[in-house]
Image (cartoon, rainbow, N blue to C red; front, side, top):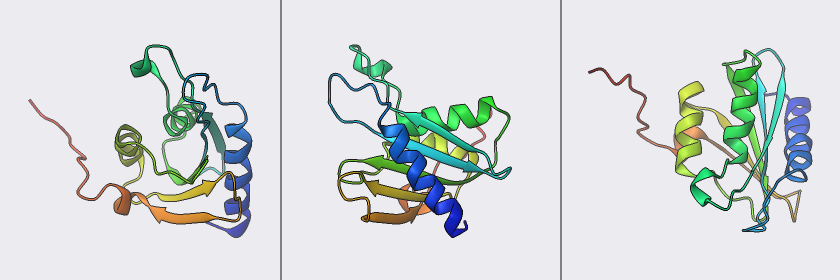
Length: 133
């Protein structure tokens, strides 16, 4: 990932966070994913009063990329208060497309605080199937 891509990812994740719909938790999250074609796809969390139907920012960004025909992910940035890591469901969706995906965790309250990690650290020994009956 180039420095230009890194900067674009960070700015896009922070911008996506501003679009979050989080009336229940008040915890807004934005995500941006970079694809092999150079595409940048955004997502934000979308809460629901039936909590299980909430959509995470990371999965929304990946769904946007895949819906546009992009399945080769290069990097993902996530912006939240405190630079939290993605949930287990998001990690499993991420590993479907890139087993060692670079991940930038951005603290939206201190945008100079960015943790760089990767999916193999966040989800060691991931289940990657295929599940065959």
